[in-house]
Every structure is written in C-alpha cells, then in structure tokens.
Amino acid sequence: MTAALAVTGLSHSFGKTQVLDQVGFALQPGDFTVLLGLNGAGKTTLFALVTRLYHSGTGSIAVFGHDVRHRAAAALAAMGVVFQQPTLDLDLTVEQNLFYHASLHGMARGQAAPRIEAELSRVGLLERRRDRVRQLSGGQRRRIELARALIHEPKLLLLDEPTVGLDIESRQFLIEHVRKLCAEQGLAVLWATHLIDEANDQARVIVLHRGKVLADGNAAELVARAEAPDLKAAFDRLVRAA
Amino acid sequence: MSPAQYARCLGGIVRREALRWLYQRSRFISALVRPMVWLAIFGAGFRFVLGVSIIPPYETYIPYEVYIAPGLVAMIQLFNGMQSSLSMVYDREMGSMKTLLISPFPRWFLLTAKLLAGVAVSVVQAYIFLAIAWFWEIEPPLWGYLFVLPALILSGLMLGALGLVLSSFIKQLENFAGVMNFVIFPMFFASSALYPLWRVKEASLTLYWICQANPFSQATELIRFALYGQFNVIAAAIVTGCLLVLMAAAVYGYDPGRGLIARRGGPAGGE
Image (tube, rainbow over all chains, first blue to last red; front, side):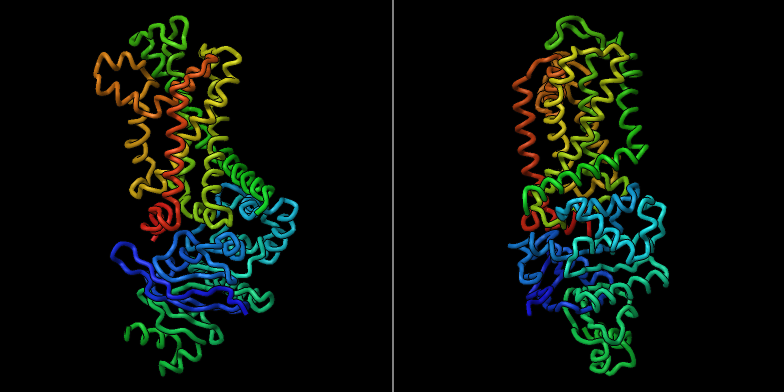
C-alpha cells in the first residue's frame, strides 16, 4: 500500500542551525499520528517542508507516492492543512472564506457549495455560515479551519498545534472529530502538538526533539519501553536522555 | 489542472481581494481620503507657491492641482501595492499567504493572480479618485479616462510586484510605518509626482537623476500622458522593464528551493 505520507532522511537547517536531522517516518491511510515535541522541536519546519512552503536541504517527502518537490500539484491536492496561526479572513464571512479556499483548489462554485455545507454541518456551524469570522469564538474559528481543510476532500490531513489557545471543550471536540474522520473515512492524520494528553493509548506517537525522531510507536508501547508510569513520564525520560 | 480551474482560482483570488477591500472600511476610506487630502490641502497650499510652466503633455498653463493629480493616482497604486502584499500588518496576513501558497497551482501563477487581484482593486480606486477630482477641475479629455486604463494596469502591476518582492525579501518590514518611511515616502517625494523634474534639476542634478531613475516617476509620467491621450514610450518601456525584473525577483523570493523564503523559513518571518 502506498503510504499517505512518507518522509525519508529529511534534514534542514537555517544557516548554521540544524532544525531537522535525518527525520523519517511513514503514515498509512487511517493512521492518527501525534507528532509530539516541545516548542522549537522542529514541528513547524517539518510542516512547512511537507506543505512545500520551501524545500529541504536533503531527504525526500512523498504524499501518496507524489514527491512534494517534483510533483507538487498532485501532492498538495491530496492534503488538507490547519496551520498553527489562524489564517481565516476575519472580515469575510465563513462561507466567503470557504469558497475562497475551494477556488484555490480549482473547484467550481456549484461543486464547492455542497461540500461546504457538508463540512460546516459536520462541525456544527452551518447556521453561522453567513456570519463574519470576527463574530466567532476562537474554538469556532478553529472548527471552521478544520472544515476548510477538508472541502477539497484530501486524504491526508496535517494539523500544526491546532488546539493552542482553545478551551477544554473545544479541544475535546476537535480531537474527537478528527479521530472520527480517521476511523470513518480512512483519512491519514498528522497531529503536531506539545500537549501530551492529546495522544491517547491507541494513538501512534512520534517524538520529535531538537530536530530528531527519538521514538516512533504506539503510545502504550512507548510507555512500556521507557518503563514509565504514563506517556508524560516516558516523554520526559526520552527527552532527558537525548 | 485545466484552464477552467486556473480561471476559477484567479477568480477566487480577485474576489477575495475585492471583498476585503469593501469590508475593511478603514482601508477603503483611507485609500480615498489620502489622495483627497493631498489634492485639497497640499494642492491648494502650494498652488501659489509653485508655478508650473507649459510642459508636455499639457498644452496650456495648468493649476498645481492638475499637475499633481496623476502623481496622486500613482500614489494610490503605490499604497495599494504595498498593502495587498504587506497587509499582514493589518491582520497578520502571513498566515493567509501560507494558505495561498499551499494551493496546488504553480507558485508563479498564484503570485501573478495575487498581483492581478491587487491591481483590479487599485484601478477601481484610481477611477473613484479621478471621478471625485473632477470636482476640483481636474478635467482631462473624456477619452483620457479610457486611455489611462492600460497605463493604470501596467503601473499597478509594477508597484504591486514591488510589494510582493518586499514581502518576500525583507524581514524587518513588519509594520507599515517602516514601509512608509523607507519605501513609500522616498519613492513618492523623489519623483515627478509633486514637482516637474526640470525644477528639481535646477536645485540638484543628483536628485534629478535619482528622480529620473525612480520607477515611480515613470509610472506617474505614464499615467500623466495617458490621461491626456498620449503614450509616453520611454515611461512605458521603463515601467514594463521594472515589472519584469520585480516579478522575476518575487517569483525567486518565493521559490521553495532557492528563494529567501527557504532560507528564512516562511513568508515574512515564520519560525
């Protein structure tokens, strides 16, 4: 089976600062993977490279077999992204924001309208579609960004610290919603976070620290391997040993 | 991607720019008020200080307001070019630049579409200004309003491309005040927008050549001549040349492999 996302030998540096060092992992369709790392671990740089904001020095990234560097259009068309910082136009309505995104994927309005309706209903915000984004709460805006990332029906979903600044309820909604998408639609998800409790026992966890992958496996396995009482303790031990 | 998809993408980008312009009342109003202030106050104040002799394309003595009007049109476009590219100052646009850049369309196309969207808005603004300026007795011949359209598009593209280049290359320009001080004011004042260059030449030959070399002067002259139904070949050639160079620099700046976006890590100062 072709991996939804295959990262191989990926290194990147800004000047003399090495941000990523030989990072490698693969995501299969239906995988919910938590990319766990402290601030400055290299998560955002990894996301920028996967989304082709810029290229890496060495290594390769393939999305469903399409190399991000050489077959960017196919790779980008297959992915949906929720960035760390908010990227909605506050002055535009929810719907206008979503139609804009659809046009960036070459979708006709007739084709986009039912998709927008479906994704907005799924995040429970269909009735707010004509409201300006400015009128929505932080949690609602995040949900809209999630809906937006799914309009063009990507098979790989990337989320960079999606729950930062959200209240507990909104966080919970977002995590459960994305897990459900994974299970029901076979969506491959890479969920970057520094919040350890966002990885449950079944989740696959990749620990990224100072640009290196320290561990990669099921959360329960990582805990057992580190002989720690829980994931937080396992993570602390890994990071301290590095 | 099919041609229809390209067209939809371009349409979506232009639509968004237009909506933002309409919804952001302060931007909308200040874009109109700024040149009017220059025209109504600065123009009136200097009317009796600065005499303008008969210089092409004018065929008679003209009031000072008539002289500065084309420069103010170019100023609208300069501000607009800077704002549409550097508007992260207004609403942290760098995030929305990311959403643009992860579209599956080629990056040169996305940047060109963004540029065209900005130009569409700036052309509308320029016409609104010209319509209001008519009440200040700035009354170019009617066909001048038609002739000026291609000039506005060309100069708008060039000044918009300048904004794109700045947004990709310069990390420090994160607030609009910096852009005002280091780009807009020097370009505007060292140009033919407010005073004919023969007068500058009398004062300082060096400044004269700086003004001549300033692409903003050429954009102003292109608009000035077009407004009176004339085609300034030299200005058009220089503006076109600058547009090509600036657009190439913008595409380079945003190139994922080579540009400064790669070295710096994201549009305008990501991590």
